[in-house]
Image (cartoon, rainbow, N blue to C red):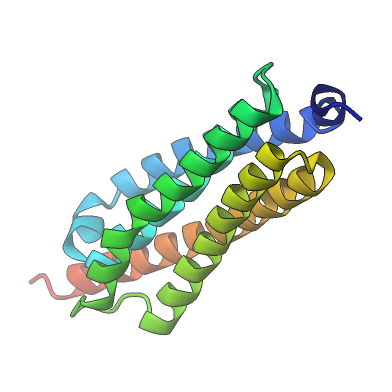
Length: 177
């Protein structure tokens, strides 16, 4: 089956995934901005916030790439580039989070969250490679799995961020005279 016919079957999935991702990015920005001091004061919180935004961003870009009327080769190259760029975007925050002296979120939990994010990025890159090689069905299955993984881990990250920032804010306020 040609790529454009096959990808048309996934159109609604990616419209929903992209819409959900864009909405959740907005809500994450609003919620973190309400406690910006706590976010700025803790490296691991900033790192997790950046990774979560990168996850939602990649889901949004994947949705856009899939619904753009283009050939499989172009879509594959775009998926490879965006997946690789996402890894680069979170590399520095992962290192900073591992060196953080304030541990609002336990280190092992952060690394699990980052590992699942990287798994999602790898799924997008793999889908891109499969698209450029002509394995359209496997590519779209890999991409759907990566999209779902990124959305699930990002929702969990968002919860951890909100709870962690809330705890840090309460702790800070309790030390005020």
